[in-house]
Image (tube, rainbow, N blue to C red; front, side, top):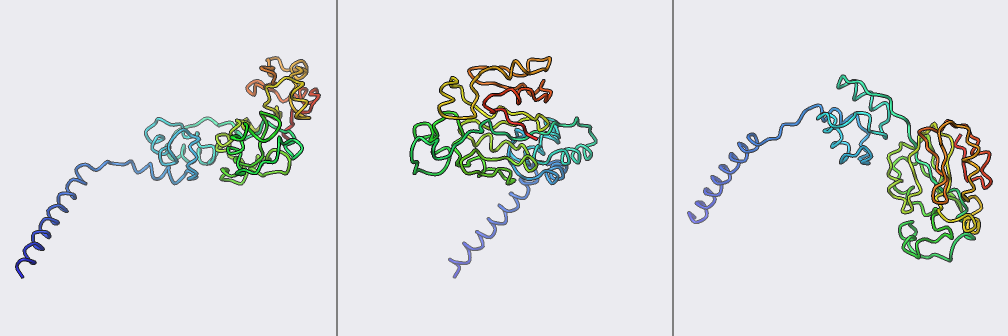
Amino acid sequence: MSAIIIPLIVLGILGLVLGIGLGIASKKFAVKTDPRVDIIFGMLPGANCGVCGFAGCLGYAKAIVEGVANPALCSVGGEDASKKIAEFLGVKISSRQKLVARIHCGGDISEKRQRGNYNGVKTCVSAMLVSGGTVMCSYGCLGFGDCASVCLFGAIKLREGLPPEIDEEKCTACGLCVKACPRNLIELIPKDKRFLIACSSHDKGKVVRSVCDVGCIACGLCVKKCPCHEKVIVVENNLAKINYTTCENAGECYKACPTKCIQWKR
């Protein structure tokens, strides 16, 4: 009997000693956390999208408390979250420009514009592995909706034969769709800027015309017609680009574009 009881007593004493030791160590080496972190974390949306540049909402909350992050970096929480955090900390923040995601492609991606019958995995990333993409335009949207599948807010809707459509009222500019697009067609643009070059092709005009009816042919008419004092539109590598910092929404570029690749976002 003693052969059983003695080991049990020893194990019990050993467990008690170890428990006391762990309790003392946990108090001695405990990392003190600022209670403000949990409060600010509760003010954030919890999307953990990383667009603020930190590892999730908790990492961002810690950075705010430590004074290394601006309280206005959360595009998902928007101005409401930023104001709550600023009021709680007793600091002032400058208003942040509202951004939305827009797709630099407006061309036809229906069956007639496909290189062939694709039977692989229905994702844009997978389609890119098949000869660089399934559509005839080497720069155009593949249409399988990788962007829509990562959107946490239901802001992206797939369309038959056309690139996806983004609901700018639902878009939070989290940037997940930007990262998901294998052809880098999506950009975060100030919402109050009304015009978009809905093309990403760097091919020459003749090639663009052969694969798309609404692609940029680098004619330069948008550049010539723009009335803004600053050089708002430039043509680089066969593609027109808008400088949204100086764009005044004049709209003459939209009127002048012969292929209608410049879209008006109302």
